[in-house]
Image (cartoon, rainbow, N blue to C red):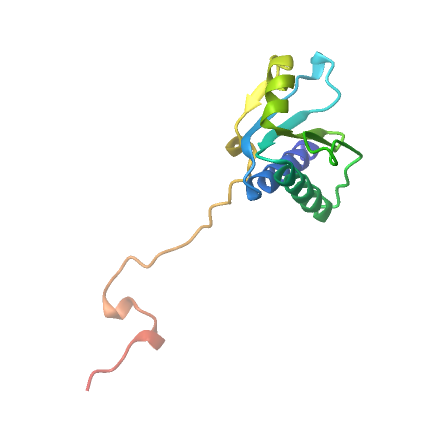
Length: 149
């Protein structure tokens, strides 16, 4: 179970890096184990132009490297039409809109479970706090009380 939590955290960080660079149409496919898939997740997004596509790729790489995770294989950075970043357990695909429509990975992997970014992003843990319910001056701590003259 711990490995799955780590993997989801890594995928979440990749999603956040894409969102930080205003990637469009961020989508996640959770690939089925028996589908012949070579990875667990695809993270896909689009960039408006080659410069933004490269910026998204750089942001993903930097953010995951800060976690100690290095890309094992990358393709397409120079052309910036379809950048592929392979992290073994998940692959990040950054497309131009034209390339994304042409290759249509969502259709090719239609048996995969489609997830929304919010489903993988870590939710902050709720902090337990205790509130003083009484509003009388005697309920306040001694330091906060003031003497009236």
